[in-house]
Amino acid sequence: MKNDTAYIRELASLAPIIPVLVVDDVADAVPLAQALVQGGLPVLEVTLRTPAALDVIAAMAGVAGARVGAGTLVTAADVTAAKAAGSTFGVTPGSPAAVVDACLAAGLPLLPGAATATEAMTLHARGFEVLKFFPAEGAGGITTLKGLGGPLPDISFCPTGGVSPGNARDYLALPNVVCAGGSWIAPLDLVKAGDWDEIERRARTAAALPR
Ligand code: 3PG
Image (cartoon, protein in one colour):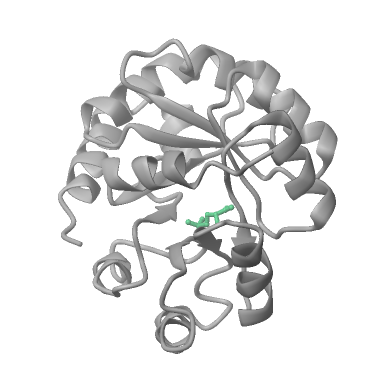
């Protein structure tokens, strides 16, 4: 089965930042997604790191305008569960063949994780043109992305991991960066506090970042 780069490119075109979400309580799912969509960030990565994550995905999938995906896919079983919950895309921190194969078999468009030239080339050879560069800061950040852009100009990246309001603009200015991911828009403390106004404000600021 083919991978769906076109869908991932469409997602990347919708907003400069993909909020990375860790949600403990399914009751927070709808107001959180509404705040982010309202703020101009419709593409949402819900990490499978809490027991509630699959229910959160299912609830957010019903929010008008939201494009909900599952992050932290680390097993083939995660892929099956994420798809069944209503995810329209998946995100992985790294890209073992078993997880990539599971996404292809499930028809789940994938933003696959890569941190090195070899990983990026291996994924590109399988047809993936947009990759999550993770962990962005730990793997060399902007310097590494500039280095990869020379020999691998056809590969685009969504850096995630250490991207912040202080450096997002510089990442987004790179020619091989199509969007970036980050948790600062909706960190767990703001979600637990139900501070949807502050989350919407952060989303609005992030959505206005140039690229
Ligand atoms: C993650 O998977 O947690 C993301 O990489 C988010 O990283 P951040 O918290 O540094 O934005």
